[in-house]
Image (cartoon, rainbow, N blue to C red):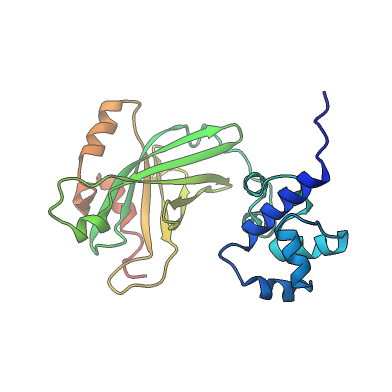
Length: 266
């Protein structure tokens, strides 16, 4: 069954509505017209749905706003859901040149892990929390949880602070894995872990890099360790109930030794 044809009137209405959305909260229409090279009166006719442009004018409009000719036929909200993120497309092409290999589940099984690292905020302290690693087809996902330490500093008398979730992707390399994470505030974290620590394959030593400006008294790169936990929800809950920030001797000796590899202060 074929879809009913869209009438010229409907095309003009869709295009005008999309064009008005594209112009919202941006440059003044006069500036837009000048940059596109179009008469303001004619542009107003497009905005009102009275007319739609010739192919060459449409091409210039699409180039200016970074869209394609589907703005004649589909609502802009639908198009935006379908449009690829150009930054991510460039990152894939420029940085992730080699095909990503699926993560070897024998080396990094799907499981709940404990994430140990030296604190970014507090010199001489360590931070620990739980994280979930699971595969979805050929993609391995990472989801971690961490206390809102900044909120605790700003309001130390509050009774509880919701844990912050951050999400990431795991990529396998010949000698380990990298994890690229981001939280809801777009704070980015890059991690690398080797396979095995002192012959123990439950532990993965590495480092964690926080992508931000330098702040006196705080770190941007710390030593870190992933520890695969037993399949026991009671163990997971006991870790979640604990405080996040500890002295170094809270960690097992094998983790302590790995965390001391990278000095504070970067």
